[in-house]
Amino acid sequence: MPSPKTLLSFYTSLVKSLLAVIFARLYKPQEIPPKDLRGQTAIVTGANSGIGLSIAVALAKQGTAVCLACRNPDRGAAAVEYVTSSCSGNSQGKVTCRILDVGDLTSVRSFCEKWDGEIDMLVHNAGIAEPASGGPIISKEGLDIMYTTNFLGSFLMTHLLKARLSPTARVVFTSSSGAYSGASHFLQESSKSSLEHRAPGLLARTTTRIKDFLGITESSAPTYALTKAQQVLFASLLQSHFSASPFPRRTAHAFTPGFTSTPIFGKLVVSWQTWFSNPLFAALKMTEKWIAVDTDEGAKTGVWLATWGNELGIEGKGGGFWEWMEWRTSFVELMGETRKEREWDTWERDAGAVWDR
Ligand SMILES: NC(=O)c1ccc[n+]([C@@H]2O[C@H](COP(=O)([O-])OP(=O)(O)OC[C@H]3O[C@@H](n4cnc5c(N)ncnc54)[C@H](OP(=O)(O)O)[C@@H]3O)[C@@H](O)[C@H]2O)c1
Image 1 (cartoon, protein in one colour):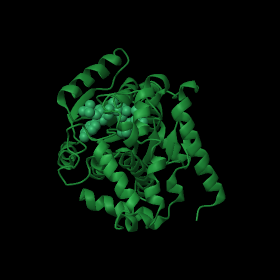
Image 2: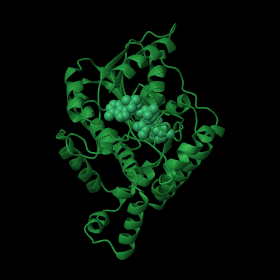
Image 3: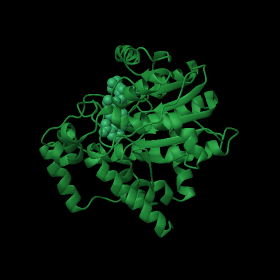
Image 4: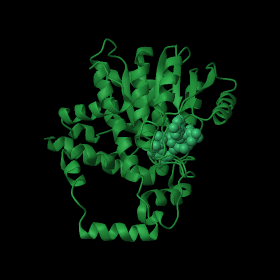
């Protein structure tokens, strides 16, 4: 049972996160102390647009050799050109692109098998808010495509690249404030499975019929939130794994970029039905222009964690969930150890990857 102090801290963090989604444009811009990253190597997934692209530019500007891990060769090549030209004059870091589809575990395996250098920063940023219109909803492995893309691909990737991580490597996950709502999955020990097997009542059946009639589809928001919560939990467990390993200075962190203006909102298909099925995403898409912070600002906490993550680890703040360069108390601090381990077991089974625990 969490202490009242932890609960208070959790709810305070939740409120701060909600306020940041709406008011972050009014906050003082984040300032990351500069660091000489020459000689260091980073992999950034989903680096051809949005937050990933901003992180890649910021790291390359400080001298990091950045590998943009992208699924589309043309978009990847255009991003290499963009990052290189953005750094002209002050970039010592070489910028390359390698093909990686994190929603396809075969592609993840192939990427990792071919990787042969040491990695100082591994930024798991690629993600989708809903399955692409007309695209698959199930991965080649028969798993939910959002689960595979937003979480499982990076779980497997971290496992396969672990031997390549430098002794002071920083692993960073671009999560979301939505992780707070996804947390309910982890905080309800048993109710979910027992409900799933119960036949729907009259009200639920009628609601489903009305929704079907009106063409209102299932919302992607709960799955999105769950995958973002999985990232936060994994960052915490990965930190414990590193701390108990021969490389205790490695760190893992998750962060929320809040509400950041990126192409992700352009990819959301919003019709009048969306206002019923997924009102939050519809509202975010409609208000992005007025409320969301710019991409570089949204990316800053991720850049800071990739750059200064070890220093936070030394302060005992590894494995954290961060926003606007501040620690947030996440649901992980409310969870029991057995429940956490059970989740990791599921990920291992789904990814076909057994960690040395
Ligand atoms: N923007 C926000 O307000 C916000 C808030 C909370 C969290 N986030 C998180 O931030 C991360 C970056 O999103 P963004 O806002 O910057 O959106 P974005 O511009 O759409 O960037 C997403 C990136 O992920 C890539 N990607 C998607 N599926 C992939 C796959 N299967 N394999 C490899 N790459 C893939 C995309 O590549 P393609 O160009 O090929 O599609 C793109 O480069 C996501 O994880 C998102 O959940 C964003």
